[in-house]
Length: 316
Ligand code: PMP
Image 1 (spheres, helix red, strand yellow):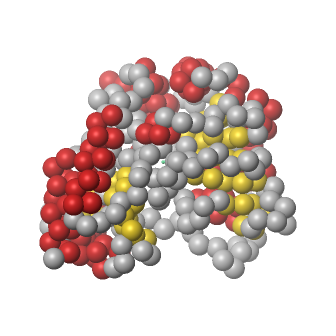
Image 2 (cartoon, rainbow, N blue to C red):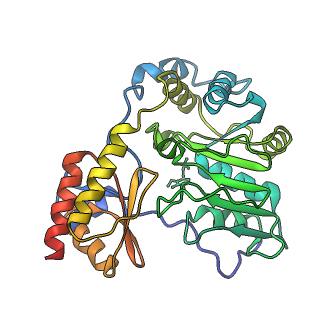
């Protein structure tokens, strides 16, 4: 097997909800996750009816792919269908870009680190190194995970812009020459477990990506869910944004300083981040810890209140 670079780190999943509940000594349904940046409830179109037709033909391959879904995505992204590449979540497309553009001996640039770890993975798994000098591809996350910031669009090309949180920010680089915008149905559309993402690229780049992509990266069941999501209309992110701002202002009342966010999470710098993470975990509340911050996914108001009061007590 081709050896991995010395610095290689595989993707580290957070512990399971069952494990978090076990540590906290609470029933699994009493634990709350604030670490996945996904909505607290499934969307209405995530129903058995939505996947019924796909199930009725589940013994067959989806010959011909997913033209209806591609058209619907193109319409949503306001580009031509030929510019869309489907993937099993945004992750699949980030990895595809890595192996399409880079190989052994190449350098891949990752902007604004620490950021989403799959950019580094994509470079390493392609056999390339992460660096700056002579980079053949640049990754950036916009809006940025984990800070939630919406910086200016970098000028490097070719540029992969991870727009997993696009709907919350409302700003996109899709359609910009030399840019591959990577998006997902995991966040605003609430379909993380269905694993559907897409890239919007220049015509020629999209065609080159397609020939390097898995023959069938998503399932008919997932495609049906994604299509139903688009048919339901653009997701209404305004309640999440309003709740994010309420959460941020309550955090400020506690003396914390959450950064301005263009996503469905807030990044809260703090010194004893790891201790705070542990204290919250002991109460069945899972946030995402960083060296000097915690990242909190915007949950339902009651759940956020539980976190806020735990933070208040943890502080005092
Ligand atoms: N990009 C970013 C910035 C993310 O935060 C996430 C989810 N954690 C992903 C991509 C992964 O998205 P998907 O579920 O579509 O693979």
